[in-house]
Structures are given as structure tokens and as C-alpha cells.
Image (cartoon, rainbow, N blue to C red):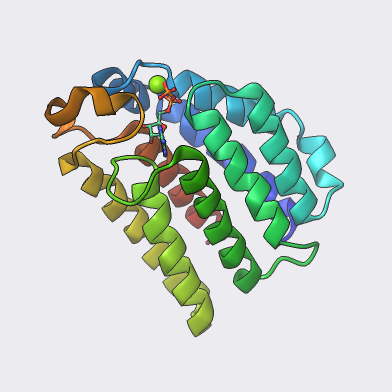
Amino acid sequence: MTNGFIIKCIDSVVQTILNSEEEIEFLDRAIGDGDHYINIKRGSIAVQSIKSELTTLPPDQAFKKIGMTLMTSVGGASGPLFASFFLALAKETSGETNLQQFSKGFTSGVESIMDRGKSKLGDKTMLDVLIPVSEKLQSLADEGCEKHQLIKEIDSVAIAGVVATKDMMPSKGRSAGLAERAIGHIDPGAKTCQLIISTVCKELK
Ligand code: ADP
Ligand code: MG
């Protein structure tokens, strides 16, 4: 992985988020407090604004810088959760990040979200996308699969994860207060994670 690739992903993710305003706003208004779009827009633009600095850093240090930027720029529950993901990812990667290392780092990032959020699979959160993606990524990296297969499988696991949140009963975050009234609605944080993962998959092509 090169920092050139990371920068390309940052620009594409910002574009995806800007293009998804209506969809994300709609989801967080239904079962949250309607600020999720603003939070992730602020975070992704803050990361985009330090691009020139990121260009000079190896991947692990770039991930750390991204984490620190998210920590200080994004409010809500999701800001510190996304930040802790990148800080944990940074610890497991290096200047020469390969797929094995990245998948280990991704898993560690997801575990850090679980720790900080006291949350797990099935709570109707972003983890319902991130946990299955981390497991699939790990197994594909262990198998040494082809790039096109990796892209296809990761993208579909992320989509399946976001769809699965629809019928879940929430037990973490703001939607938990709605209990069964949240059933039938997709979790906004899960949707954002799927959009980001699908965008990175597209960039990998
Ligand atoms: P807030 O909930 O503070 O308004 P956001 O709207 O930015 O923050 O983010 C909401 C998203 O954060 C939810 O849709 C969910 O995916 C995620 N989330 C909230 N609490 C947790 C938690 N404890 N663990 C994992 N994810 C969480
Ligand atoms: Mg919110």
C-alpha cells in the first residue's frame, strides 16, 4: 500500500459522502438525531485538508495522523469510534503495509471500536458492517486470493452487513431508545461504513 493510494481513496471517499447527503441524512433522521452526515462530512473534509502532509508520510504514520485528525474534528458517537479505528490500524501497520498486515490492522481497528463503544455484532451499528468485513478480509488475506476476488467479496460482505441492520433491534447508540420502533430502518453508521468500503474497493480496481 502506498500513500498515493491512500490519498486517492480520501478524495473518492469525500466525493462519495457528498453525493450521499440525502441518503445518510434520511437514515439518521429516522433513528438518530440527524447529525451523522454533518459529522462524517466534517471528518472527511478535515482529513482531505491535511492531504499534503499525508503525502510525505508512510502508511502507518498517515493512518495515525488521520486518526488524530478525526479525533479532534468530529463530534457525536461516531467521531471517536472512527478515530480509534485508525489509531489501532496505525499500530499494526508499517511503512511497507501489505495485505496481511493491513487485514491484521483492520481487525485491530474494529476491536478498538468494540472496546470503546462497548458494542458487538448484532447491536445495529457500524460494527455490523465492519466485523464481517474484517473477518472476510482476514480469511482472504490468509488464502492469498486474487485482487479481483477480494474486491468482489469485500464489497458484497459490506452490502450484506448494512442490509442486515434493517431488521435488527438496536442496543447501542441513540437508536437504542427507540427499541422496536427502529426495526425496519438501516443504521446510518453502518451505511456510511459500507459506502466508504465500497469506494475503496472501486479505487482498488
Ligand atoms: P451520534 O449517535 O452521537 O449522533 P453519529 O450520528 O455521528 O453520532 O453516529 C451514529 C452512528 O454511530 C450509529 O449509526 C452507529 O452506527 C454508530 N454508533 C453509535 N454508538 C455506537 C457504539 N456504542 N458502538 C458502535 N457504533 C456506534
Ligand atoms: Mg447522530
